[in-house]
Image (cartoon, rainbow, N blue to C red; front, side, top):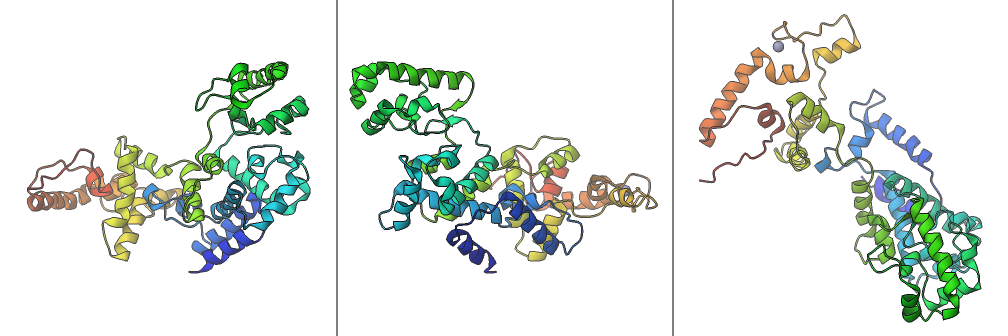
Length: 378
Ligand SMILES: [Zn+2]
């Protein structure tokens, strides 16, 4: 059980870039181990999801690796004085700071970064992570203005270096706080003491921003992980916190099982109700075997006659109990006339015990869920 901490130690300590393909290969090995070299019955991506989203909370090595890299980047922002390596890494960025490199897409063109193994590895991992999070390659509000290879070279002359010294460092410094309205030249002069003779430079940068905006190459909003990096929030348990952010943000929130159950039950299940259903798979019983049985049923783990027929055509697709209808999952567990008697007796007993009348629906009995169904506490 201590495999994950051992791997996490390596992720945090070794400054190596691990590409996405490395984790694909690792996940394939894990899948083979879990399913004992047989065909997987549940998708690996589903197993990785938290229990509240219908997964089994299997740790994702890739997300832990990225979390360790983002934690390293947080030290760039906070600029801890006791971290001597930060000074060494900062030297590779030329005139830019380590904190601003995070918001540059073509970071390989900055200073000696491409030759600095440690910093470059972290940034390459961050580039993969941004792709996973769906962060576009647009210029963002926290991109630096001077010496930024994503912006025209004209913005790196001596006058803009002076602006940098005066405090206009990122694109967001040119905008009114939390708006997309550019500050006027007068406002920049009074706020940052920009010399009046720099009006042409202001027109130049305004033109760059407006052309980037019209070509949709500029975005004002930051992703939640970017915000964490931009604000350098003080958080406890950084890796766990970042891991949670990454697992919540990346990919689709819910599994395709929600869509499959909706189709079977012919109803729309709200995201809130689905989260409750996923939770109840584990909470409705303390017995481990019962939990496993719940999970297997929930994930349609069982082979129905229809499924077996698709694998081998000489197996009858009909239900084994009534032998007259197709043996689908819903038929086998709910609508078969042979099993309907069982559910009817359960329903009668449930109404008697709870002393409340309610409809007998597959949503209640199969998924343990019903919208707007509240028992009278008295
Ligand atoms: Zn039947």
